[in-house]
Figure 1 (cartoon, rainbow, N blue to C red):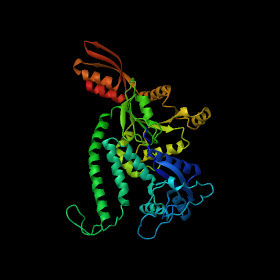
Figure 2: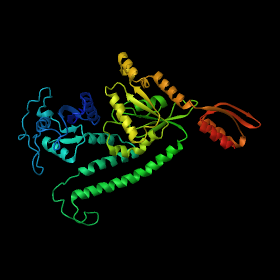
Figure 3: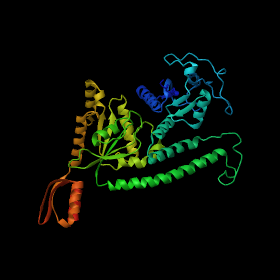
Figure 4: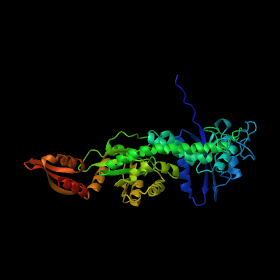
Length: 452
């Protein structure tokens, strides 16, 4: 007898199309929120949308849409006045009303959603009002992204980074909990004179963030030391929107066994591997965390050391999912994030990935619109070989050749020549080892200096 999988939590999406947002951009943003929900294991059962000039300060949407949203969750559809009370019982909830023309019909009671996912960043009062009106848990876009990062963080560094961002997010959202907790108190570790329970909670959060940042700083120093050791190497960083295929290209270019999943933010840490097979030029390839629209600022700040891998690289490979209808908007988001971390001046090559999912007409259209980009697929070995050749050509464009005579007492120079350059010929005579070396000017200068 096979076990039945438990039902997935049901969620309804809420989005407001502001006057400055185009129809296609709005639809794409809601679709992306649905993918985020799926990544967390939620089943999206409906969407409630409204056009407005700005978000309603009280509960995001107007009173009519608030009632429509509550029909998906079984709530009252009204924000109670006064302190929060108990959730209405099923007998007290209003019946299902007819949806607006063109809208989605609210589900029967058995299929109601227990979550409301909002495609905007909410203030604490907006989230609280929505919860009271719908009787469901409310998560804004930032909270959903943070939950995904928390679930996918595997390394100690990633877990610290995500926890710092999560605590920074919840700190201003802590509110009074009642139950007599706000009496003044003291004692060791307790509340100071006149300190309320919520103030105590905020202080504990601030103290915990300080502890985590101190621990993260120690890890970042070690990572910085490793980057310094790689400073002389040719470095390429894979950057781009989440789920664009960066990890797939990491596998294709280096032969590594990095995790590849069709999920948003499957990769949170930085992986560095050598370009394979090795050639005349040694190149290190690094995979980085993916970007997304409205990536929380606290996450960008927490992952700054990880993103330094991109800023300090010699070349950025901007991986783009060309099969996504919104890929040009995603390219813009990546450029914005790179600019925010100071990586916008690093040389960049755009790789339009997943070409295998496009028909001939669409490939021709995209190729004409992005003539400077490479339209490839990480699944095709010939495309991987083409990109590898392009990378080697980039790093070998300024290489020089020279002949060096290395005395037998300085054989470490021979090892360095093999490590940082391409030894075209090597012979031995009474004077020492004769090398014909092709390498970057800086490498040749260093080898000559070592020989005196």
